[in-house]
Length: 320
Figure (cartoon, rainbow, N blue to C red):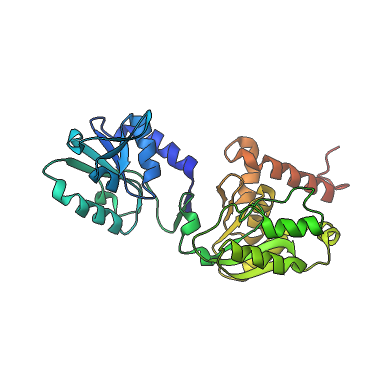
């Protein structure tokens, strides 16, 4: 699996910005995934931008104004941008829509990411990224989410506050009325949560109210909050379900749990705390001091280091 987030998108555009000539008059994004990279390119190239349909209607976004209308013939050289190319069907459809305008405009085509073998489908591309791949800006609508596991608190909805998390009336009210956070447009394979089984009815009610589609809901079968805290098995509980079927992705909110789920399951975990994908937490932990990998794992690294020290207390590796 290959993953790119918005930070990666921004970095690759800045790194290879010089491949784009500066004589384009207008940047046109292909809705909707192409609008984000088109906006970034327009920003860095200091050019106006719009989407395809708006362009055909003479509607151009310009700095300092919410919307302005121009004669589209004022723009002679156009760069059409999409985020990626796989089959190339979307780009071909776009080219077809510009076919009748070829006598009025010089149109070039750009994709930020292309799969191997599709480099010639556009005039400009920024990076070759093979399949399978996920992008932060469209992962919640990805057709393969039925092969994914999702946590609830911190992912589908906000985490409860300490006051709300009383294992009583306040917590029940929270579950029923929690503000939604990241709601997928595609069906989820399995929702895996550390919420207690006794709150299943309220949880299912919230999921239905917020139009969350899923196949299974796995909860923690313990009697109360005290038992849940004593077991401290959040990551193990989630990793067990992740391993149980041929799932390809787990979406978790807490960075420490995300790294631990990855360590146990040996499969990718997307953390919504920063929208980074964790592929090999043990390798990241090992190289943390070198600065080669994500600094956000420092919290997790320190936690694991302390556990190791406790487990080896009295042994030859104990530091005094």
